[in-house]
Amino acid sequence: MSCYSWAPALCARVAAQLKAKFALTSMGGVKYLLGIEITLDGVPKTSCLASVLTSKNSSRNLFSRILMGAGHRKLQLSHEQWSKQTDIPYRKLVGQLQYLVSGSRPDIAHAVRHLGKFLSCYTEQHYREVERVLRYLLQTRDYALHLDIVHGDNVDILVFTDSDYANDPDDVKLVSDDITFLDGNVIAYGSRKQGINA
Image (cartoon, rainbow, N blue to C red; front, side):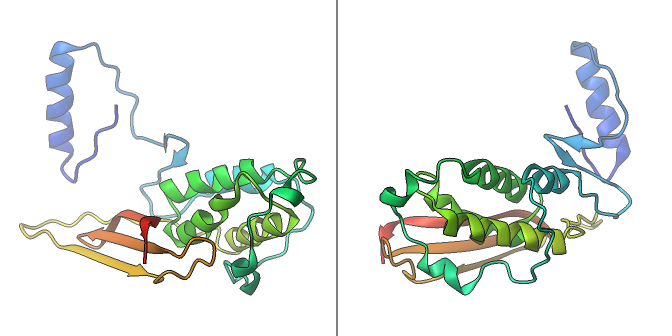
């Protein structure tokens, strides 16, 4: 169990109440939570990202400042070509990117959602777009979510949302992206395809 609070006394009180009913062992401050590294000094660590980048086994360490190229709109579902491309580690990389999005990288949520559409029928062209995302991550490996403790009585909730208005040529469904801030801290974000047509 992990306990977080701006007041350490609150965590100590919760721990004491739990210890009265259960056997607990304090292990100190949290360093990793579900594979995501947590630091208290504000210096981003890149261990989760490093595992994604090293699993690719590519000698091409080129950087990219562009997350998705102009060709991403031309990606098509292709069952005929997919049967020849089963040796590409596309699914594994997209799965790792999805986990990275869920924990610390809202900036790649839209791109990873788009690439996730092709898990059952991908080609070399799809794989090149995943490589572009990996090169972008290599360029931005020091990016991280930063959470500040805000003391006060007021709670500010701010939500931004946007939609692409049926820009997907395959099914003409809306894709909406959102990000939610609590006192200036990102607490929720995502990129979702809506279930209805525009």
